[in-house]
Length: 220
Image 1 (tube, rainbow, N blue to C red):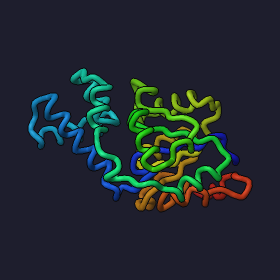
Image 2: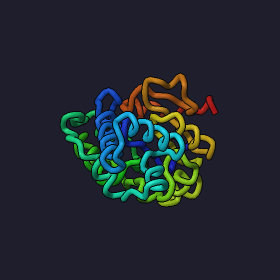
Image 3: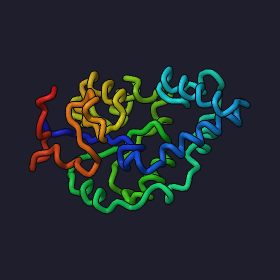
């Protein structure tokens, strides 16, 4: 199968979890909840965990239960110095440019954050589009509707012609159940529901034949 669209998650997929960026964003989420709702740190962390597991993202849960302003939340939690956590990745840039297939970012973050991350990694210009959490409102990953809407917005009629590169087990599980070809990125591939696993995003080209068809679908 030669895919029509490559879909890339952003955080902890295009850069390694060891960077510490997602941890820093998590601390900003805790701080936002503390300040907005007047909670202690432990209360904020417990609420964040509850919202995440019940609604897919903390944001969606806070929207539903507390009516928090979406743009205010997104701007606050992503207000971190990316240069502290990320550095340019010319190797990945060359790999992505070498793949003559449509490529998009699909993230539970927002477009400004995605653009800042891509710029910090020097991957700006490597992707054809960004689909963010605002685009898929009121849904979010791992909701099935979020993937269906993202594929629709990308102009793809057959979801089985899409390949998802993602670090999250639950997002991969949903995408695969919908018929998408899935590739888990990261070191915990043994726990994955994905078709294939690569240890890091720099191995992305390894799943393709020279004609850019999927190399191995034996796990389907």
